[in-house]
Length: 303
Image 1 (cartoon, rainbow, N blue to C red):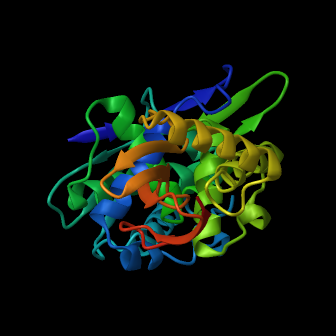
Image 2: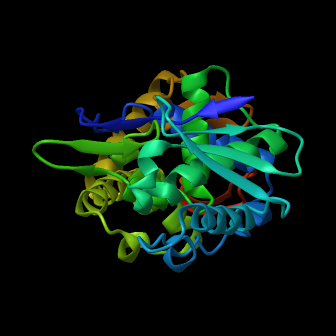
């Protein structure tokens, strides 16, 4: 079975956050499949020194060295990695077999664009991990978004973001996520793992995309009923809470928003966990500490 990644070169790169709902679902699914302790075991991220591909390195030996480093980082069984190059439409493909060898094909263009070999290998080796975890989404598009998200959240996807380059005449991007979405996932990992990936970027465009994604992640981590919410957010929350109390009716939640609902013990508020994005429900009774049942993050709330 082969699974493919995409490379967009000499074409316009999509920006923004069009896939965030699927990205959040992917992070939730990862925490559901792995325990919080297992997710945190992927610290630190794979380091540049382990995946740097020098222009003087032997093509095949260097690709195998980088692939082995990624196999080790992603906690896959140690086995022979066979990397080959051929003409193909997409950036890379991997053969999902029972093992023990890993068979990966890379686009011939990587023979001369060696700095991005690690990025392509990271995505394909994550496909192997997800196959062995029996974790997938229906449909090619959502499954590729899942792969990009898991690659990034488990510490190898900064390579994919760093492969993004854009100027007035050409552009290159690996993966299905937009650059800003890669930055969003990477920032979520940085907050959860207490990391700062900014020193690893060699691409100025990747650094800029990370700052935009980080701003979005921080914005979501500062929404009511979390105590980190700003004044305007708190005023809006108080107004919505009063309306819910007066009408005694449920209010549907948006894709990333709090919602009030009637529970057996009175009014409750539900909101997404800022780490794993699973929705949490707590009673409306002032200051409370909520513990996410999935990722076990402790959230300070003012309900």
